[in-house]
Amino acid sequence: MSRNYGIYGKKTAQSLSGPAVMVLTLLAGLFCWGLEYYFSANYPLHTASSTPLWNRIIGALPDKPSAYLVGMLLLCGMAALLQRANDYLILFRGKTKLPFLLFFLLNSASFGFVPLRPTSVAFFFLALCMVELFKAYREGKTGLAPGNAYKATLWLGIGSLVWIHLLWMLPLFWYGIFRFRLLTLRVFLASLLGVAAIYWMIAGWCVLQHDFSILTDAFRLWTAFDLIPFREYLTTGRLILPTMALAYTVILDLLLRFHTLHAGLRTRRFIAFLLTAARYLLLFLFLFDTETVDFLCIFFFPVSILMAYLFSDTPRNVSLYYYLLLVCSLLLLVVHYV
Image (cartoon, rainbow, N blue to C red; front, side, top):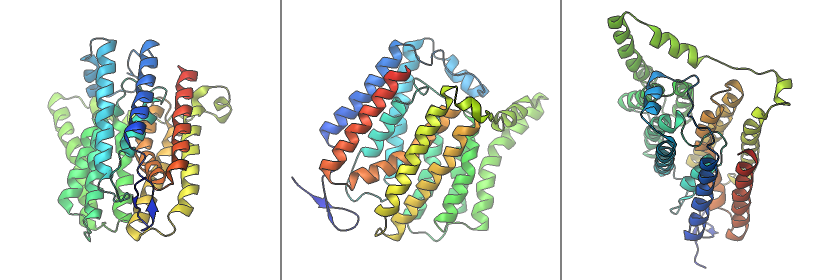
């Protein structure tokens, strides 16, 4: 079996993203979609706490087949963009499709995500924002150009028109530019202007229409926390997804504490940022009832990359068992809840 050299200079097994694993993962994801289509899971589409733009998008989908087809295409596009963002991280020595495969599989098996959610569109703008951040750090710049910071948060502002909760990712962007030593006063102010530009335009439209309900409704949705008493978690199924995400976070944290001891500084910073992002997003799974699945989709952004990092640097005979176990557990999750 041919081998290559891993990030520590030692020999590692071939990537798990070979043809057999790719086919297995895609078939598992398609099985999840087929099962949920058969039971019409989560159809009609999500409209609670929706923005006007999202209501227009789903209003253009005439029936269930079109909703599932568009949802599938968007998920594939999301996974492809995640793979593109991962290319700037330099966590993997060789090429691997594991981030794409894991993100596709985790979201396909996430009960409540299929066929289509607001984050199915908003995710693209978050990924573009993260690409700007990762690219600046990979190029070894001493500071992020204010124009790039403006563009990154401008993407967040545009995405928030579809899913207003995307604005909660702004503190995560600020943490990233701080963690990667890219933060300056000009960069911080430019990042504020990027988001403000979108809402200044909306405010101008509201002035012309003499109606500020768009802004007031957006702020109300953005801060509509839904804190359920702890005792109710024990009698409903709402705790399942947050608990699963918490398990992912704890296990990844423990494994990576030992796995990255000898990694380079750049790799350690990337991993620390991704772990912090997972912990940060975990909080929102408990704060918003109707948006849990959307935040879980965003949560799978860092988790898919971290899982791919661990699988790609583990001996093939061990990683394959872990990966098969992951696929089986996700399939059982879908069968149980659908």
